Image (cartoon, rainbow, N blue to C red):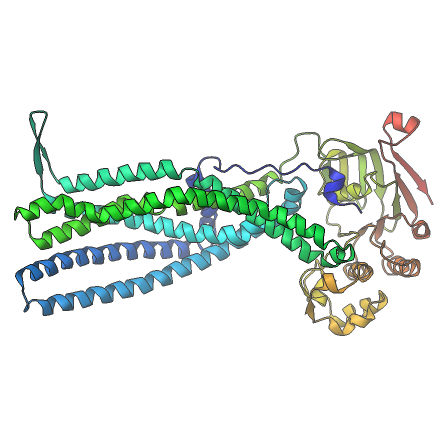
Length: 599
């Protein structure tokens, strides 16, 4: 069986848009809002409300700490030794409150992040696997690395989403509290401008606003390329990791080919993209980070220089100056929330874009292709078949035309044809996972259908789980499983049913195909479709297994793709699929590439 993407001629996947449709906030809401339709919504809302309440209490404590600092500095200025005792006790109470609030914050944050990640991961997995979306995403190359988006991006989405949301709310609360302190403490300032007397009430508040807005605009202009660089970083890292995983998964084949040197060169080329992106980020950070650090450090001294003239003129006390300086710094940091979280915001935009891309890709995978598609219809009858079926690649190249047939219960059909004629694609069309082409596939309603491919899939876990797949591990008794292993010449593994191992690597290709036949004997499907499922077996073993299928599953309709001539004796019909590009004579002129013979 050919590789799907070699046969299909699938085009390289297009890069996902960096900014999702509707903007980052709307996309983030689309990703998170489905939890409101689940039983978890009340728990999530309650925890979020507690987190917001905790933010309000923390802000109140910080305002009290700011006031304490002013009282302390005034006591220092007065040399008030007797007043230091009560002041110290107040500080101890404030520090105890801060410690308790910090512990509660960690508990709430962890509960929301862990619970949110679990829900969102399960939600994304369900959407990715529903209705074969995971297969169509790979078949049509809709997005890159969906596995990384679920494993890493979901975790960062939940963590950064919580941090930024609560941080923004805290910034708003702090803005309200410390703006009032600055406005009240700083008082008005008057000066003459162009011959006119100007009075500015709460001048220190306006100074903080102007300083924060100016620096925020400057940081945004300098830091604008960051999102593009981070998006490229995520993709380059994921692609390189995928290449490394491929070497691990195909270690034996690479070793037999003596392909170490070639793989080394290929991996080096893959790492080149990571390396180039890393240096692009370094060059950006060299320009951006110093600006950010300098602006934040300057904000510590700006309020002192602004307030100092009033203190030197004895208009305010040292405690007032200390409170105003602390409030100014807090307000600037609050108003500069955008600056302080600029990199986190850009990372969050990248993560939202990638997860939104996955969300949209799972929906796009369900959409019908633009050109005519193969229709699937459920019937009340007992026959699986096709009418006027045309098979094509995603690029539009026709593989086969006008396939029409019906499989009745108990019939056994052998599918033959040259390589590249579309035999495996026909199997995918019958399975409902290949839309490209035209015509109709009819599927009996409620029928049990099992597809066996050339390369068997063995999920991680116990041997019994692999044998019973796609049913649950406990679907069949151990005695039945052991007997079917013996029947399929796998008796040496009867004592290892409960052993967990990488069975996909431990079993040889021939053993994996025998295990697939054992699955069919356990599942007893109404229709068994086999795509060169015995290609790795010797003729005697192949005949033995087909005899088992005929004897044990007499009512099962069998549909086999195989090049082995000896299998004709086990089938009642032959379906010949001819490559439409190489067809000759009248059949090619009429577009028919099918011949059916009753054996």
